[in-house]
Image (cartoon, rainbow, N blue to C red; front, top):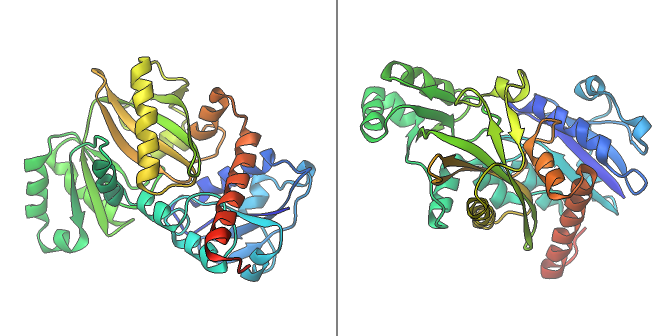
Length: 349
């Protein structure tokens, strides 16, 4: 079977995608699969790499960053006995756009579908769905570009009248803490909102909570499986991009030191969140847990990071599923979901 490993992309999370793809390549079972890397440049070109059929043939991380080859022909996706594995984070990859392409081409692909990808990527839409599903959320306000340009002072006043400091300002659609700011006073609010608008036309402003950040990994389609709960242990309250990927200032506590009933509730909420967005394949659901064990959902990531320091594969390893087995399960879930579509709509491939 051939795996089309699609990575890179036009998102600000381009580099994280490359790192995730590199480590996924290390764990694929080459006795069963061959892999064709397909690199999406920051400008949006799709470049076809060389087929990999042994671990010895895996490109280096540097080679993956500057892969050379022909422009990829989307018709190749329709090859028999193949599956697309999109290792893409953020807009133009994790937001339903590329998933729509795969649906239009009628090819099997790993991960969430169009609706789940779009809903999970959008922090504002997902909050509405989580609240409707009965999962606690932190108080928040939304800001649009039009409102901000029309009267930024009035918008800032509305936010500060409804939410106490500290605040967290985020682009509605992005991940890996890109474009996110911690705001501790009125003077910082304007700059934080302007920064977030560099990445999206809608901005989320959340009330900060003094809490531990914990995460649950999900694997499955209709049959949803959850991992043990993991916690992020950090000195600073704000877990930013550099903390995640540059400075390694954050350590992971797996399993998290929580009462059993709290861990059980977190796993139940994670399942509810996955179902609320119509998830499939995989997700990582992030929560806040306060000192008195109040729980708030933060967000759901429909394609979480697969880097060596990423929580998702580590959670499954602690739960009893090795990295390579997670990759294998994701491929099988993709095929199962595709076959289900054939049953409902008929084969067009």
